[in-house]
Length: 287
Ligand SMILES: Cc1cc2nc3c(=O)[nH]c(=O)nc-3n(C[C@H](O)[C@H](O)[C@H](O)COP(=O)(O)OP(=O)(O)OC[C@H]3O[C@@H](n4cnc5c(N)ncnc54)[C@H](O)[C@@H]3O)c2cc1C
Image 1 (cartoon, rainbow, N blue to C red):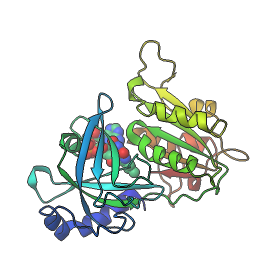
Image 2 (cartoon, rainbow, N blue to C red; image 1 turned 90 degrees about the horizontal axis):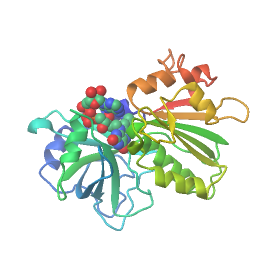
Image 3 (cartoon, rainbow, N blue to C red; image 1 turned 90 degrees about the vertical axis):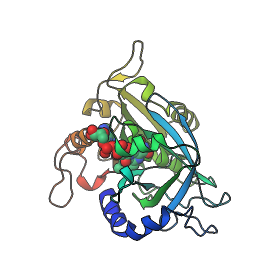
Image 4 (spheres, rainbow, N blue to C red; image 1 turned 135 degrees about the vertical axis):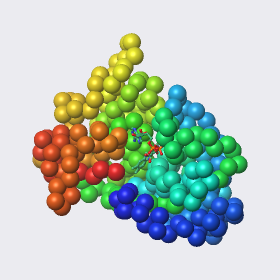
């Protein structure tokens, strides 16, 4: 389900439930995987730790410590807060970054934006605080449907890509090749570098990560600038033939627009860097 549609559906269903759930600890059936189907859950924050200058890792307990979340590739959770104690919720999606097979918790990596309503709220949470969440499906991943895919992320838009890369490479039956291009502001924003380098070592020739830094520090060895056609081609991203059958994009609005352009009559990308490179609208998914 596309994120805006999911948010609209969640808004429609939240009214009475929000009132109820704000005064209770958990509304779930603890025997079931809580996010296997749509429903609202109050999760307790177990820990919160900074991982760089503007990003925190938040671990939330699931209702049953022995049960998986039930999230599938690729899914996110809608988070709800009620600014100033009001009735109009602030709703934003975040993609869990822990292994989906782990039991008892989900982890979010949340980048804080200046004046960002939800990211500031999430950064302010203390262990023991609770957060109202509901699952949303992004794309249904089918192993081996495509020989190769390209993932393009900007900033914290890396989290859906990280979930997907781990899911693909962690499935022995899936042989899909993956190229990841991640654009960030500074070198310190590449907060999943170790994880991606490990995956590159474990899957040589099948997974490659390329970083592009718009404001690199002295001595940075990364590419400098934004995610352009030149950068994508240099990383090996290409359409047609042996190229990438699908391109997934998640980043700040300006980056997504530059890459995928404006939507055409039937949702196809008609302009933008990816269109210029020969990708058709149906090959491009924008989170
Ligand atoms: C499918 C999906 C998964 C996501 N997963 C994550 C995740 O795991 N971790 C995470 O940190 N974020 C994630 N996001 C982004 C997240 O949903 C929020 O958009 C983000 O946290 C900003 O919300 P806010 O309420 O704090 O900011 P707002 O109050 O909405 O905006 C405040 C200011 O921040 C700027 N801003 C807002 N969003 C962005 C952006 N993405 N890039 C640059 N500037 C921005 C706005 O222009 C504005 O000036 C995801 C988004 C999608 C669509």
